[in-house]
Image (cartoon, rainbow, N blue to C red):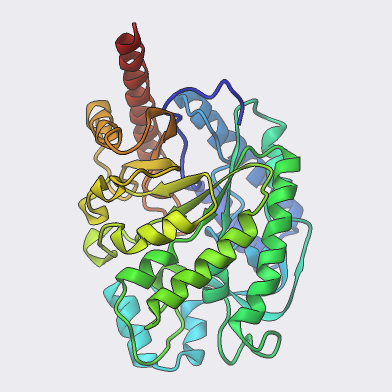
Length: 392
């Protein structure tokens, strides 16, 4: 990361809402109605627009807004041979408990016809790159440091392997994980070569492991809705093993993003609980930064970090799922709380999660996203000025 990065850098978790015209072209491309080049040209324009909004707002570390992606991990269906994009309604035929599957989707406000999940149907082979090509395009148009979000290995091994669909290619999810780790390790290096400064490994399903209620019969769900395992400790150990294998010797700053769900604006259906059950896991991750949500009461108290964390924290200071714009004063107050546990040089400011995680169901409008980012930038400016004043 360039030395010019200021104190309290402002960034985003990754996604921004996509324009309606781009969504129409995405559907047309997926249906085979237009050549991929037509969508790519429109996506290039959308990325440049999102980049302009970030730069004008004063964001310190930019992303491409995930404009080319259907959601934060389903885009792999375009990038990996052996993966097919399926809606929840299609996958119900493979659920072991169909009634439970329907009840859970309904209770969690997750419509089966909107949310799509990549599903392994054959051996994995990379088409081009997962994100390196997109990174190269972004680097050609900005001098700002670049963050690249990638779906994490535990998320993928757990969510894209479906019994009855995937076991012909990979008999177990552990067998699948070997190929996933190799692909992601290579992609981190390729993104660095393309100009990335920070690779964020998205592992939202970790919160489901510790906060979700175990179920007796396994039903397939998309990533944030993946069924909890009864062997929580074993799942967490495996997650650490996979993530560390991807991040080992990475040539860029790495971080792991963990949230409690970003598919609905109804906070009551999302997971809740502080980070205590994940603290040991966080400590065991060989990454530079924890990207964590703290903008809502569901995330609990930061006091669990009283025992000397040695990582950076990407501090969630605005809630992407509501239209109310947090004031710079409110954001600065949350950062001051974090200063009780983290050195100022280790605190980054970001939203709790993406503004447009699912292309067809963004949790925020573009004007709301811009306003929230501007508020973070204003808060960071105040905090920097105060630190300078204290040092004089």
